[in-house]
Image: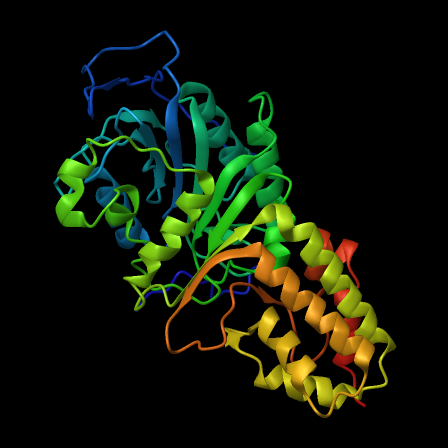
Length: 409
C-alpha cells in the first residue's frame, strides 16, 4: 500500500528558481444560494463577499500518490463550495498538468469537473514561492472569516513535506514556514486559522513550534497515513455522507478550534488509513518548548546513565522512528532506575504542557501510547545537522540533550 511518507531520505533540497508559466485569466466565482454557478466565459471583477471559511488545498500529487490525491479532490467536489465556504484546490499531477480549481458540487468520482481558475503548466509544488503565491492569491480572491491551509502529499516529520518528482523538489519545515509567511504578507492577518497535513508523520513538537507564528491550530498524524489519507466528504459536511445533501443547506458556522477537532473525529472512522490524528493549539507551543528546554537541561545535568535513558527511549511509543514525547516523559517520571528528582519534575512539566497543547487526539489500538505529538529521540549518533536548522533546535537544549544521551555511558 502506498503511504504518505517519504522513503528517499531527501532532507535538504533547495529549489531552483520558479519556472515561468502561462496562465489563464483568473475568475472569481461567486456563490448563488447553497450552490455555486459558474458562467462559461464570465469574469467577476468585484471582490467576493467574505464567507465563513476558505479551504485552501495544496495537492502536491506529482509522485506515486497521484491517483489517491485526485480522488481526494473528487471527494471534496461531492460537497463543493457553498454560500458559507470556498474550497480551492491546486492539484499537480506531474508533467504539465498543474491546475487550480474552484471546487463546485459534483457527484462524478471519475473526473474533476470544477472550473479551472489557473492552468499553471509544469510547476514545482515544492518551491516555496509557488506555495506562497497560492496562499496569497486565494486569500485575496476568496475572502473569509477563517482560512484553512491543507498540505496533501508525502511527509517526513520535522524533515518536511511536499515531494515533486518532476523537479526532484522537497520542502523542509523552515521552507514551509517561510512560504506561509510570504503568503500572508499584505493580507492583514498574522496567522492562518488552521494548517493541516494530510501527510505522514507531521504531528511533531518541532513542526508545531516551527509554525506557531503563522497558524493558530495544526492538525496532523503522528504515524504514517495510508495512501487514501483524509476522508474529505464527511469532513467538509456536518454529518455523515448520507446526510450531506440536507446538511449543506444549514449554516456552516464552525470555529477554528471546532474544525480542528472535527478533523480528529473524522479520522476515528478511518483508522486503517489514519491510525493517529491530533489537533494542537499552536499558541501553547512556547510553553511546550520551555518545558522541553527544561527537560533537555535536566538530561544534560543528570547523573542518570545514558544507557538508562536510551533504554527508556527504546520502550517509548514509536512512529517510524519518531517517539511520542509524552510517553517518553511519562516513562522517565515512573522509572525506578531514574532517581534524579529534578529530571522527574522536568518530565512532569513536559507532560502537563502537552496536555495543554493537544486539544484533541485519536489513535488506534496499534498505538496505545500515542498522546498527540512526537519528537526526535535518535537511537544512535545524536541529531542530524539538518535538525539544527529548526527553530526548535535553536531555541531549546533538546538537541544537545539528545547528543549527550546518544553517547556511551
